[in-house]
Length: 340
Image (cartoon, rainbow, N blue to C red):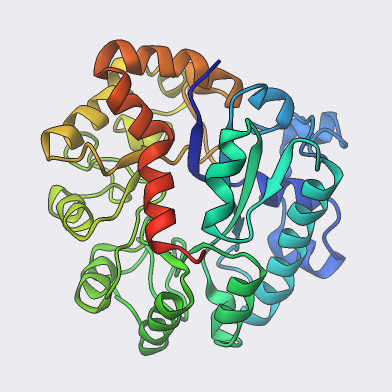
């Protein structure tokens, strides 16, 4: 049986929810979640059980699997639209969990995750990527935490009402700083993966609790601005946070697109893990695939590839490090710092 997996980020939830979006929200999101494979098979990403996405119960198989299912909110959505969008996506995840109750656990708190993994189940963990909806109503932080939200990032790529991504050099806004404090009080983990360097520095100065980078790699290995500098990794390490290894081709190998990206080899992925281990990150490294949100190497093309990936990791890093990387570090972190 494969080792348990705790994946800190995927965009599968948006793809599952896209076809049932209200017309005005679908118009605002455009075709972001609708690709050629969807046109060829319109029902192919409608259900968690079986689909043509990277993540499905069929692809996961017998692997005990906890999946952070992000509601990814595009920068084009207003905060008010984002409230409705998030409710729709979370409702979709909740329906899919109920439909597949025999094998899926919907995590309402961090304490639900380990028992479900121990039972060999799939665990759906609700998160938000680009929490601009909190600008419409900061009280949503507590209400969504009560619903089961366990982690959120403040921005995506552009400047937003809470913070700025890598398209600008602004840091946290005053509202963003207030939301950060509310998240910490509510037990919602802060995800810094899309913050620019200025925003990261602001978080480091203001945060009182550990935070995570759910899907980022090493900038020393691949010089992409979305990746973490060594100093940023050390900051997360020293605070007791975790960092999820991102399978995005362009974040693994500089300029790797198209066929070059598909042909990325295990050694090129392992280079990021090796570098982080050299920085004292054995208890920091985790998985953050970015499944269904990016192009990935052929050997990581879907959840069904994880058992073979784990075999490669064990051969390179040993069983203890592999277990920590694949699930234990993330599990332990959420049990300590996320809402129970």
